[in-house]
Amino acid sequence: GLPILLVATTMAPVGAYAGKIVPKVYVLWVFIAFLLYSGTMMIFFRPKRRPKDGNHIVEGSIIGGIAGFLGGLLGVGGGGIISPALIMLGYEPKKVAATTALVVFFSSLSGFLTYWGMGALNWELLLWVSVPAIAGGWLGTHLMHFKMSPDQVKKVIGVIMYLIALKMILKVL
Image (cartoon, rainbow, N blue to C red):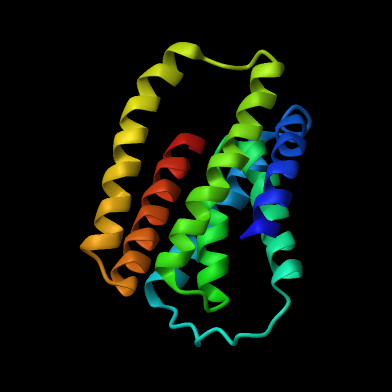
């Protein structure tokens, strides 16, 4: 998770600044396609067990770079990129969820500070979203660790990706 964390946190501000240049509608359509693909992979794809060897630094850096950049560009944490990529590579879903939660926190913080520095924050919205997000994070973590199997975690993440894609499609149209 460390390569993902470092590169995602570094790339989130780059994505936030790129948001001033790239028309968001193009990025949103690419992100919608990715969410639909990832959601499908999470629900239907059966990954092989991850071998112990492999270049975790290169894989993590690539995943972190893409997730951080798009996360900063769109103002999201990048978990919709990190989770399916790691699961497709064969990592265990519960470990993926924990790794993603840590990375998304720092990547989001990096993007948040960048948007704050650019003067692009809505403080009232931040207040209204923060409390439910913290409560949902606590509840989701509790359910994942004590009530759900790894396959259930994967399917829930896939359904959530479909829902986010649907919401974004409605927003773009």
